[in-house]
Image (cartoon, rainbow, N blue to C red; front, side, top):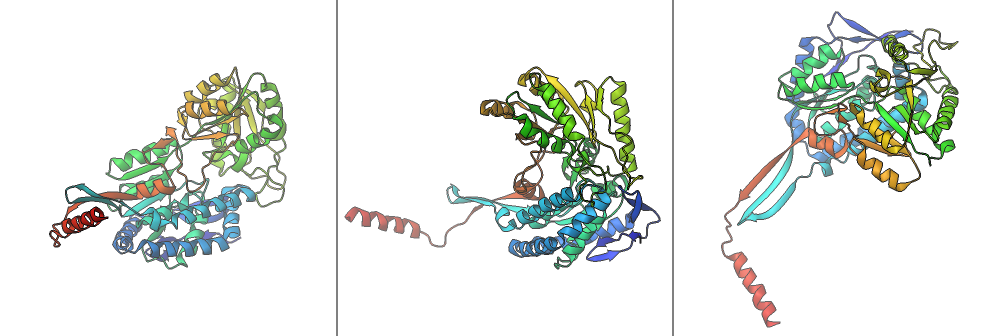
Length: 504
């Protein structure tokens, strides 16, 4: 198999990096190198930022309908390549083909929403706020934005940049160094649409090298980041300390709470899918399953039973429902957390370590791994980005809410119940950004915002949809008074109407 050397996309051209350092991209199911990703040089970063700056003003004054037309074309062309992009996701990320198709399907919805740019970019106007004084605000794009997507959704999150384009900004995307092939193909498709040179740029490399250099570069105006809370905090502080806008979505430790009236036989498959879909490598994955004591044993039994039915393997093979984690390092980190959980006294009730996957013995596989644990334990509190999950018995819903709110994360919380009153109260009390009721993964549709609370979100404007336009633009307020050249006309018109109605 030929190993592809990935190129950067700078000012409308694919350019091979002059770097001396190349990073391996591996198929995690086969442990095979499938591409080499450059650690982009400082000179190449400077050239990219300059190109994005020079392209900005022309793109900024391009009428929003024309920008939208290019995005419509991009959507149409990307739609034709969905299967190809999904296969790339499987091969560099490890998720199953159905999960990859689900990702690209949602990603397409981002482009669809961004096509509404002409509507989204509208300002506001108020007449006669004072004598002869009108006030309005217009939305102004700001300049080159940096986009730092994570490895776990290399198509979907990378496509956040379409909202920046719709707003009139230029974009510099730094690919995930683990999964750079997907966004490379997406930008190749975008190139076919005829976006002006410098409007879209793609660089490869590490976060600590290329990412930090882009954030601190004097020519960029802001950054959108999705990843771990530790890195998100670093990106946020670095950006704001360099007078940049920052929108940083961090990690999660999501909970489901199962009430005694939940329809167990119907909901448990959804719970298991929410825990292990995308091999647990997503910020919306359920980490901790809480069940009230009256039904806990039944929930536990059913959860283990369904978890054991998951089939490990290469995501392109039929029947596979759980792929590998993304890298050997990721697997080693998860295994250390499992060992730490056992050491801390958590009870391991399903051990997924060292699974036998006959066709792919070198893959980075971990089967469903389930603990019974307490909130003070690390395995219960800290994000484990993989298929290691915890169960806990709670006395009642009140204790369940208390456990959820003790978490330092605040991304999602979910309740399974048939009681509307319980659901309403739960939604009001849990300190999270997204709430699910009988839905284990409450990921908002593309035209709703997304983001968490506490250390799950750094910044005050959430991602996606209309809030994305708020982030990628500034509201300029214009207050004006004009001395009329039709002096007295308005008064005579008013007098004329008054006389007319008086006669009638």
